Image (cartoon, rainbow, N blue to C red; front, side, top):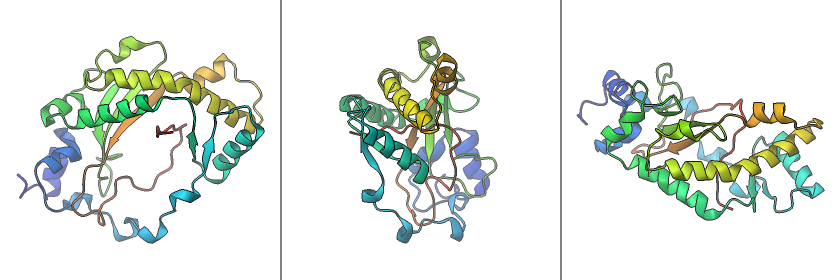
Length: 242
């Protein structure tokens, strides 16, 4: 299989249709990136354009009501579009448990992971997929992700989530809710939206998604991309330690 998987049709069938994902390719022991994953030269990673971590805004939010915290968040949001917060109150162990749970899922055998791919998943609140739009992309992205949809208080929807990561996901989402709400309040205030009533709260927080992204080791990282250029049109919250 490894010798024939480089054919684009085989790759699409194996990775997308059969739900094996990039992890399934790696498990085959491939020695080079299949043609379907090779990015056009103009889209390939350019190390010379990487921004140093030290220049990305890191904001201490241990005192949410501090005007300096407010100004730092609004400035980072308007000038950068993203930032990192530390001392947010979500226990480090909760985040470590979530990361370990993600590893646990992707370490499952192919046939176990496939149970959550399109056409097989037992619930529309959980979906294992690969790349961003694998049926339309010229070059696929070197990533798999397990997507969860969650509404506060509706634990019944999560009953069919993978047992290897369900409890850790729910615990993280519940712990993160207060932090997300505080961030939204600051950002809305920065936009001169004075009220954060029940209607606005539900519109912005009523339904949430979390992705467990997986970027397996790539044999030719200079030719592929884990995530291609894109813009997110939703509110994104990415867990990190701190």
